[in-house]
Image (cartoon, rainbow, N blue to C red):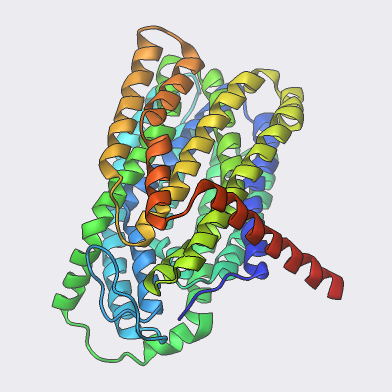
Length: 475
């Protein structure tokens, strides 16, 4: 079943991403106002540690989503490397049910392991760095936050399933409602004086609500629930194990990629907290959040079109593949530049007015923004390879991320270069190879020139905008 992204899907994608990021934009002034400097810095550490879920996911979420997409497009079977082009237009519900069952078992084990480690080693770490905060608030808040991470990881596959079948509007509607709930609850609990505990409780409610909404919408999407109910035959354990082995072949590679992304991005906040006061860690963490938010908004076309790329690959539609990739690259680059411009001209002055010591300089913001752009731009191209069920970039990602951590520790611990040592370590580690190599290889394989990318991408973007305004005009 071919997947097509409509203007409605794009609108809900932007709504979902904007509200997810707006949640931080709206909550940050309240958090900065109601929390003292040390508590605000600790909250930044919480957010960095929450990214650990991508490590415990170990690539299964992305890999299962991709394989659900293949089942939805009628694949007869799943293979370890590459894809088998579909000759059927009907979903393979039997194969989908097998894949889903394997997924549930895997994520229960992963979530349990994550909670054990976060509630033990993670608690010791939080207790160590929060010595300046009196009472048990940091530990209690962290326990609630760890529970939220467990539930998000365990039930997270429903969001992946929705993206896998191309239900972009549905997954973003769930995101919008859940984020609104989190925003309202966070502000209310902060106003009542619950501080870090209140923020953690609101995060727990957000994750639980999103997963339940995603589950309901998945089974209602285009008769999936009815189709799966018709598969009443017993699913042999050997077949489930076979699905796991097929998925595991690339999942552990995706896991290493997730580990690499974490080390290349979030680890620097952790390193910062070991060498600098929590107040300065909070300022750096806030800048990373803002730059990451800009990249996420810019990458909406990239996120929304992942199931399209997977669909055109399995259906061998090379022309649509070129146009989709070009749309992703052009829209991402343009929006990232615009986002950074408005951040340094409007965003930073507003935040500095609320709490001057919690905001970095414009030059540091631009340095962090450039690095976040490079990371996501690189991922736009490596997604081309992953959509064809190939992960050739594992070693390069892992080596660059390890190099980044080592350089950061040397710059902070030995040379004492501060934030610029972190930024320089990140830029150098990616600039050596990953920032340009996968871009070149993807263009060569698709037989797509950079000039054609700009032309096709601009054309596709123009069609989307014209289609949107024409629809608005008819109303």
